[in-house]
Amino acid sequence: DNDPERLSEAVDAARYACGGATVTGDTVDLLDLKSTRDWAAHIEKDFGRVDGLVHLVGGWRGSETFTKTSLDDWDFLELLLIRTVQHTSLAFHEALQRSERGRYVLISAAGATTPTAGNAAYASAKAAAEAWTLAMADYFRKAGGPEGPTSAAAILVVKALVHDAMRADRPNAKFAGFTDVKDLAEAIVDVWSKPAAEVNGNRLWLTEKP
Image (cartoon, rainbow, N blue to C red):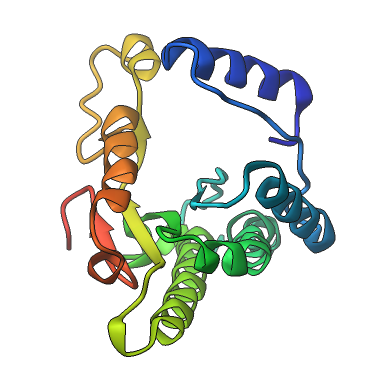
């Protein structure tokens, strides 16, 4: 996270939810490549290896119509949704390749495949993040040689996410097509249960595929 107080709360909650599991937190500026690379290096040094990185960086901006799209929204989303993918993938790709089960998982949105008029900036940013992730998948494929990849880059596609607190706040909402965060967590774990070749370079849909 980039907020120490929010990070501390999240780490405490994760430890409690996982029965005392070892959970650590770092504050990192993912918009700074050197900071991201330093983070990757010290994680591998401290723990001996890096088995995975799950990229879930929030941020959305849209408009009423296509013609009202603000390019300021693009500037904002390009940093959050693309630059952070670039920096984390460049910082961690070698460590993930060194792992026997390395995985890079991008949480993407269905809008990247079916953009709407008012969602041009967001959908374009998500599509660019997917393309970058697929390029990383090609790196893993080539690094694996004739025997196939040992590490993988995969994309999990959702429409949007929902959790219990959101349902409590809006008891009459249907959240059609939304993915529960618990189901997302299970899908993330499942990426590691499958062979690298099966998930590498694939979009894994958690909502209805258009």
